[in-house]
Amino acid sequence: MEKLIIEGPSKLKGTVEISGSKNSSLPILAATALFGEEYTIKNVPRISDVHTMLLLLETLGAEFSFYSNDVHIDTRKISKWEAPYDLVKTMRASVVIWGALLGRFGKAKISLPGGCAIGDRPVDQHLKGFRALGHDTEIVSGYLESFTSNNTGGSYRFEIKTVTGTENLILASIFAKSETVLYNCASEPEVLDLINFLSSLGAKITKTGGTIKIVPVSSLSKQNEPYCVIPDRIEAGTFLALASLPGNDIEITKCAPDDLVSAIEAAESVGSVVKLGDNSISTHPADDLNSISLDTGPYPLFPTDLQAQFMSVLILAGGTSKIVENVFPNRFIHVAELRKLGAKISLDANIASIVGVRGLTRASMQASDLRASASLLIGALSASGRSEIHRVYHLDRGYESIDNKLESLGAKIWRKNE
Ligand code: EPZ
Image (cartoon, rainbow, N blue to C red; front, side, top):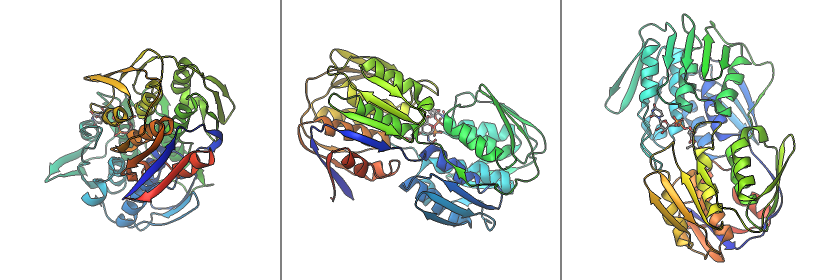
């Protein structure tokens, strides 16, 4: 295992390029299994979750190459419909292969995606949705076994907005016998990117507010041109949090500001002056940060995936800030680690109260999940002295070369074997 060593406090200056979206790449790569063809997907980040998804597809029979950020994948030889436990357990997102296999073969056997650091990751909405659309599903010794009694299409109203639940039901409905209408769907940009990818292959999908309608087709067409994945809004938001800290002067490029409205508003509330370009965000941070209140929620509300990173900003804001985590039941694991730096944070159920402090002091911290790791990194960059972050594989799941990107901004950061 590796750790990161960070010498702080850092004053970061320069331009950072945002990579392609992890949470778009994963469902789009899974979608290539829906119909046996050759596909080229561009702007795919070189992160371990993408490698896991590609390995899963290869296990099912696909062949792929991955050079720079371009994936060429041939799914014509996919013949298996079982996603094995050892791959599914490491990545919740592999659950989205379920809909693609069900759509292609009329059956799928997926290991129950385990829970993870941020809490139990239920799939009851996926289950209820598949059953409503004619796919029988049983849980048999830790596996979800789905088979299509009659891929009739139909309708389903999600009881909670779920990103991969929405993506799974779209994938399973492309080749149904009749129209499918899904209500109360997730509207994250990554869902729209999946819809755009499928539409570019001839799928007939329309989204009006939270309602998605799928008119079935009998097959998908060959790609006219490579598909380019949207920029990663959570990586961009992570650098936006970092750029909101006093003394930093960062320009974020190759991003999609329109996907980050709530995060940009949060940065401005903290005191930053934010200038937007078509694909860039420049931030001039305040010398003294304002305390604010943040509530996480489904898009377009403030993203749960940026909650930990903005907490690492608010621990230095004057006064008392409040963060309410409304999406996941256990997404404050970073709090105990930030307290090691000297942060003053108290928790009451899903509410964090943060009393700002003047400065932070180095600590040795343990990463627990992807976004919590980013929060510790931001905290370490602000703290005086040499901090360590252990189990940095969590960070590598979703951030492409983040230590190199930070080093190019002037951060004193090293990666070492534990
Ligand atoms: C996606 O996860 C993202 N992952 C997550 O990003 C993100 O935090 C999450 O959406 C919310 O925006 C990918 O897209 C690969 P959900 P997903 O189903 O789809 C509950 C990251 O760091 N729920 O939208 O698994 C669930 O427990 C990751 O990049 C049910 O109750 O999340 C949660 O409370 C972390 N039943 C809420 O809905 C279900 O059947 C939202 O979960 C499904 C979900």
